[in-house]
Image (cartoon, rainbow, N blue to C red; front, side, top):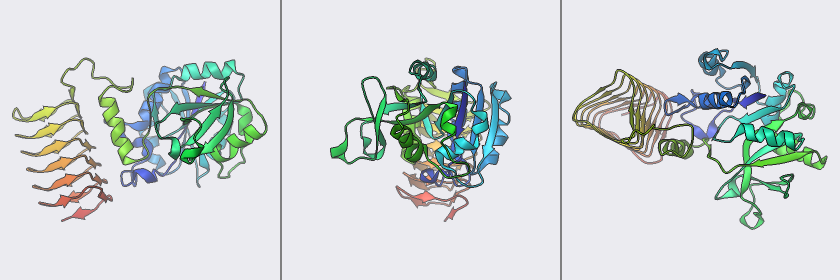
Length: 362
């Protein structure tokens, strides 16, 4: 079985984190988001993978290369202009000569891909779409099915009175090569708006695979936070503290002062320094090469690599991208800071503030 991962989006909803970091490379527990995809595919014996890339493609290629480090075969297709979900798969069309998994590249899920493929083959389906239940379906595309899981109708972002199901498109598909012939070449074309409705109109064999498993769209900062909370609290099968009762994991070559107070769940990367009387209150994730200086407090935060926090700083419910520097005595709550942000001495950053990369606040 093969797979195509759509990794070319601009990550607009996740900015400023994705202004100079591809969405598929944002760290999740200090590992690039896309790496979870690839490892999960490998666990389901899928080793031939195409990454459909566009925006900021080079960091993805530099990190994953040909995939041999992960024991898979990686190839890349590059879009010069945005082609949409279906157009991007058409761009990889020569790769698709058998039933192929297609993934929206911003979904983290524990979906059983092997079971989904089994159902696809059993139904002799042209297309199988994974579905997942949500509490509030008004922001998603609903999918109605019959008792045999044949798809009857798509309903995009319905009004509350129009809701007939809470099952939504989960962003994972299995397509047969025949589907590729329906997609125009080098044209912006959407599976959701164009190809799926076309297949229904032509009464093709389109089925659903429903799964009540862990599922999260990381497209917004609050969802990105939630994914970390969920992983740290064991809600996905893709991360575990392995019976570590304190739920504190520390990387290699870290220096943590004996007076520092760390309350899990906390993950700390390699080569970090935690100073005297520092308080870290989980859930917290700290990337490699970070320095948290004396008497600072880090509460409910995600810090990427090489973040420097000076003494007497208070940070709460905040995301800080790579190479951020926080001046002594500053207070930051509910903010998102892009790469290379510098916050000067004694600053107060208020809730909801989004700070672009390379900004200096003083």
